[in-house]
Amino acid sequence: MNHEIPSPQSRGNGFTLLELLVAMSITSVLLITLAVIINQTTDGYALSQRAVNHLSQARAFLQLVESELSTRLSETPIVHRSAMLIADESSDQIAFVRTLTNDEQYPEYPGDLATSCYYVAFAEDSDQRILPKLFRKILNPTETQNLMDAGDEADFPEVDPTLDEPVVDSVLCFKATPMYRNLETGNDEPWDKTIEHAPSHIELLIRTLDESFSRRFMNQAEWNRIAISPKKSELQMIRSVSHKISF
Image (cartoon, rainbow, N blue to C red; front, side, top):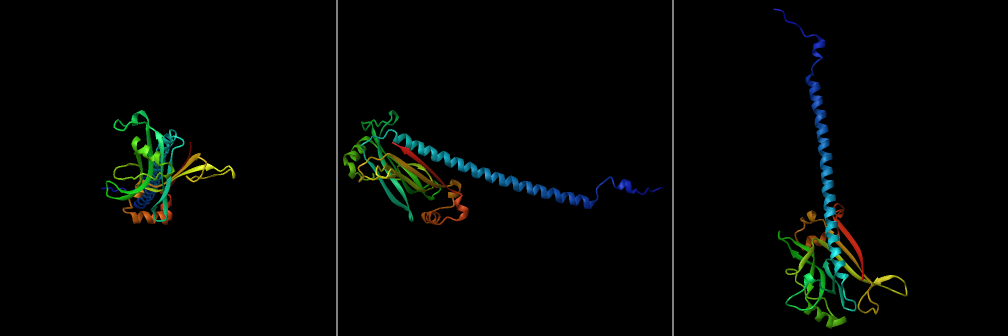
C-alpha cells in the first residue's frame, strides 16, 4: 500500500493552529474595542437625551410662567421673598395676580382673577425618596381679592406641598427676581416693594439635578451635600436654565 506524503505545497493550502489562534486573538481584540465604542456612544446618547428632556421640561415651565405673567394685572402686588432651602442655598418664592382664562374659571368662586404662587419645598415621591420640587399653587378669586386688599403688606400665601401641583423635580435652586430700570444709573437692579418704580421684568433661574442621577439621593442631608460641594463627576449632572420675562 502506498502512503503519499503531503507535499509542502499541499500543507500551505490550510491554516496552522498558531495561525488560527492569532486570528482569533485579533478578532477578539477588535470585538472588544467595538463593544467599548458602542457602549461609550450609547452612554453619550443617553446623557444627551436626558439633557434634552431636562431642557424640554425647563422650557415648558418657563413658557407656563411667561404665559401667566403676560396676563398679570399692573398695580397689583408682587410678593417675592427668599427662603432657605438647602443649607446655605436659598430659593425664591413669588406670587402675582393675573386674569383667569375661560378654562380656569371657578364656578364656586365668581370672578376672573387668580394668583399664581411658585415655591420650592422638600416632598416625598412614590419611591419614598425625599427630594426638592418646584410647586405651583393657584389662589381662587376670593383669596386673590384678600391678597390685593393687603397691598404692600401682603405676605406669601400659605402653601401645602401635599396638595399643590409639582411642576419640576430635583430642584437645587429657583430664582425669580423682579427687576426694575434704575434711571439714575441706567442699570437693571433688583426690585422690592420699597422702591417707588414698578418692576419691568423678572429674571428666572432654575438649577436642577439630572433625574436618573437624582435617584441616588434619598434624604435632605444628601441633597445638602451636593448643593454645597458637588464632586467633579457630579457637575455635569447639574443643569441651569435662565430666562428674562418682561411685563
